[in-house]
Amino acid sequence: MKLDLKIIALALVLPVAAFAQDSVSVPSGKYPNAYTSGSANVSPFTQESKRFNDWAISAGAGVPLMQSADLTSIKGFGAGKNLFGWSAYLSVDKAITHAFGLKLQYDKGESRQGFVNTKDHVATTEGAGARTQYDAISLLGDINFSNLLRRVDNHSPFRWALHGYAGVGSLAYRAYRQDPGPFYNQSLITEVKPFKLGSLFAQAGAGVKYRATKSLDIETRMMYLVSGDDSFDGAGGASYNGKVNDNPSDNLINITLGATLNLGKHESHLFWHDPLQEIYYKLDVLADKNVDVEVCKKGDADNDGVCDDWDRQLDTPAGARVDGAGVALDADLDGVIDLYDKCVTVPGPVENNGCPYSNTNSGTTSTITDNTSVLEGIEFDLNSDKILPSNTPILNNAVNYINSSTGAYRVIGATDTRASEAYNQKLSERRANSVKNYLIQNGVNSNKLEAIGHGKKDLKYPECNPATKCPEWKNRANRRVYFEAK
Image 1 (cartoon, helix red, strand yellow):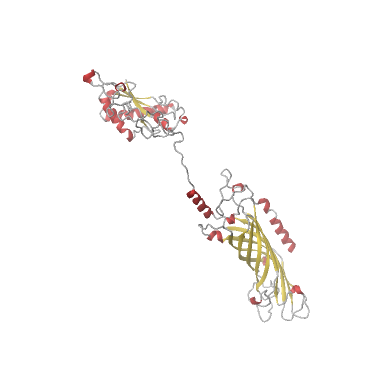
Image 2: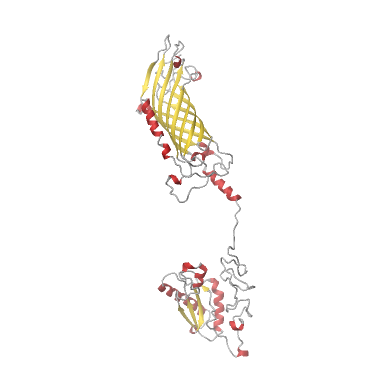
């Protein structure tokens, strides 16, 4: 009977070391119980993805005390004197979460109860003595109360933990009794074989663990074993000294001192880790960390106040006012920037420093040439022919300029290099017509305008083919409408 249970227990313990996770260890930080994350390149379902050890082996020894029985181990419990036996346990432990795990445990021991210590082999006249040799295998649930109840703002070292245990299993035992009289003969009263219906038992209790090292825990534990059998104490249901136990189950208290060996190469076992504590630790680290933000990595070559990282005009003349993209301002959109424009608010040709010609003095009128792109810079969103509200002032200036001239003009639409030629051709025509219709609705004679589309063949930045070769602002500049004199 006993040999079978020992073989089973040994067979369950030996494979654990082979299956315990042992991936690369995670270095600990200054804050207790805080560890960095694992690699982002591993599967979440493999041992390598785990950051904490979760297998362990526990062993310990102690004193079993028969408590609720006809013959007891402590005088104050009932019938008997203060008698002490021995016990030992061995278990394989698996942490499922930081607060719950399972134990497959093997217990072995011998309790002594009654009025005489049967190991002394002396006769007694006061009352009977008994001893119970037992072996048990049980599956226990393990609740880590410290991880459930611990304050998350506690910065003290996490070295102590309270655990609760409960489970069921199979109990095998032999109970011997020595009756009072002139002899010390002992008789086998009851024998129960393992893995039978009548051998089921339950045990529950609590333990306090101390983390001695990252791999070794020391634990003191008290378990209460419910045998479910009135013959477990060896009394066989008889009464002694006028005291009869009415409880149909003889129960045992087992007080032990043991150790737990945490398996694996990680810095910590999962039971010594509190996820909320790690979150608070990382928040503290981020709060204390000074982050230096580097701006203008490429500098500001033209010294216009706009970093070269997003400057769309890297050679702005010194002293010119610029917009947020670093482009020199041209308030009247006549092609002469405000720095050189003698008539900042009135459009005029480049050769006249941005001022219109006077009809009476020169006998000429302003003409729009290929160099006069009044609508240059009217840009569109991707895949859209809708005129943006920001372009309204530019278009209103164009209305005034065209109405003051006598020529006819081509309104030309263009796109970037995304999509097919056929699609972009139609999109560019829709954009040109959108601008043409706006000008007509605001007073321009339709006979002076012709809308045409150039598709993606008319690029302001030819190097943006394909579009992925350029930043988005250059592709946006290619999505435009401008016009030229016929």
